[in-house]
Length: 137
Length: 137
DNA sequence: TTTCAAATGCAAACCATTTGCAAAAAAATC
DNA sequence: GATTTTTTTGCAAATGGTTTGCATTTGAAA
Ligand SMILES: [Mn+2]
Ligand SMILES: [Mn+2]
Ligand SMILES: [Zn+2]
Ligand SMILES: [Zn+2]
Image (cartoon, rainbow over all chains, first blue to last red; front, top):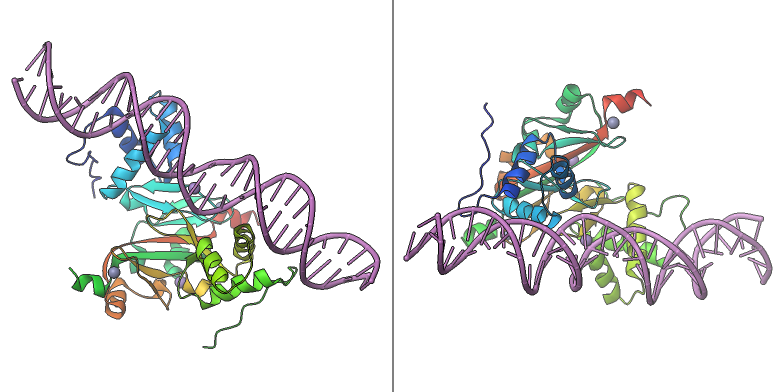
């Protein structure tokens, strides 16, 4: 179950900004937004602009290395590595807890047992290709 | 399995705009955004402003009558009645199909069987109160 | 009715995100 | 390793969904 090291996708140049963003996402424990990445890098003394962060997040998302998501009562997008895309959010304090095993293989009761959350709701989005589009190739 | 008619929450006034918004949400087959509600009402000759729509959607969401969500590659929020908050989205054409039974009680395979989608991914968000906050009351 | 808080419409403000463009940096080529 | 080519970056300005201030209208209580 070793963490596979992330690398910049083929066809894209290796820049210190790009690598720094990936490193922050790797170390993050849950989805974070562009501004948080910006701050984290600023704290580490790494020069970067917000637009560069946005441009890279867009690229990484398009390439499938990163997953974009939105949370209730937030108007900013969050980004995370795919293994951190399913999570529990506390309505009160905003605490985020990653769900390690795919929720599709579990039940609500089990989530309650494992995390101790009092679950009040959830939202699920499933992506795929509909029958019509499958036919159209 | 009769659809329970939506009504304006206690403490809020009954206005034609408020009722019109609720009616649009009731008739909608899947989550829609503020602009779509605006257009729908305009087509029906109902006078309303976008800000009134936003203000009401915020109130309805806060009161739990409506659920807000975001979709991939869209920078607008969508709103729907709670029974339409779980759905399948086609990555190719954007078609939205409501998942009638709580996905937590099903498996991916069943979704494939029922809807014929080729499922490529999903994201799940669970809301609740964490153990710490439960203790704090 | 009269009264008054709540709701609306309009325009302006907000703010996360995007974009144009010139300069800087990376990879390719010589 | 210098030169050329292409990508990437930074900055500032633009974008666009959403929010907000305020004067006016409306709902419902009295
Ligand atoms: Mn459900
Ligand atoms: Mn926006
Ligand atoms: Zn909490
Ligand atoms: Zn499709």
